[in-house]
Image (cartoon, rainbow, N blue to C red):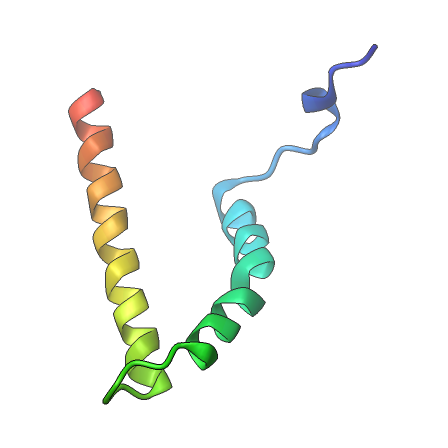
Length: 68
């Protein structure tokens, strides 16, 4: 039996990010359109998601630095 991991082409970071984005983009757009927050329009919901994502990236970077 062959190793499945060896059959998956290796991608660089940029390619993996684009693959990930394509897989979640439609769901994120739908989430933003369907999220009803009193007093917030879709652009504000999107900005809040972006801010949360930035905070999460910083948290992951901090955790990674603590383990190295």
